[in-house]
Amino acid sequence: MWMPLGGPLWLRIWLRISHDGRPMMAMGGGGSTYRSADGIWHAAIDIEPDRATGRRRRLTAQGKTKAVANARLRMKLDAYVRKGFTPNSPSPRLMDWLETWYHERAEANLRPNSRRSYENAIVRLNKIAGARRISSLGHKDMAAIQDGLKCYSPKTATITWSVLKNALEAARDENLIRTNPAKMVRPVSGRRRPMKVLSPAQAAELIRNEPDPMWRLNWLLAFATGH
Image (cartoon, rainbow, N blue to C red; front, side, top):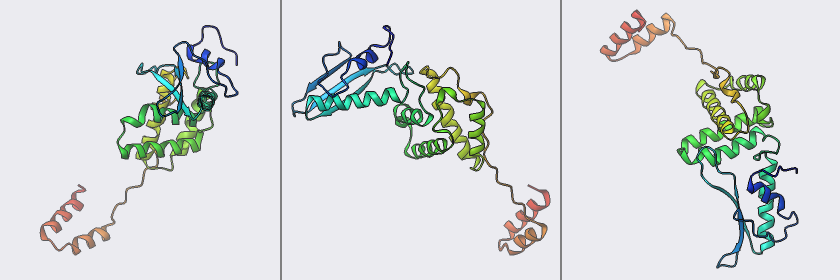
């Protein structure tokens, strides 16, 4: 992989890590390999801080030998680059970014019920456009997602669209995309269920079968006035 000399330290270190699982050398403060008291080897490397919070982020791995720990860390780094979370790799697919955003940003701040809603929303989004690169998402993709959500209730469609918009906004904050395409279109509304109205005969039967005189009067007034 080509990498400019001025690239981030963690990625320059990544390029120097052996691909064959050989022990990783000291990495100038950006990473380390050490053995803990229980005999397990640990390998770690600092990656770019979270741009939204400024918090430090690390990738870690462990194994019974130094070579195994380094090989596992190498696999994690390969996956990180392959999914598009570096300045010079292809833009991540929507499904990869949604997974990363959910676990790194959203999940910790959600209640259990909200977590399930977000996870279900991500499943719906992945079915429609999960394979698309987020940098290529445009109006046509947003329209396709909206069309795919029309079969759901307004609440479900709104939650799903909110998840998409928030995830893409986080991608914009990370400079993975220039603009948030979900903010450029009107929010999805979902499928509205038609309101069922009682016929005069059904209303008369309801009033006739009401045993409570007060409620019978209330029903009569409601149907007569339309309120």
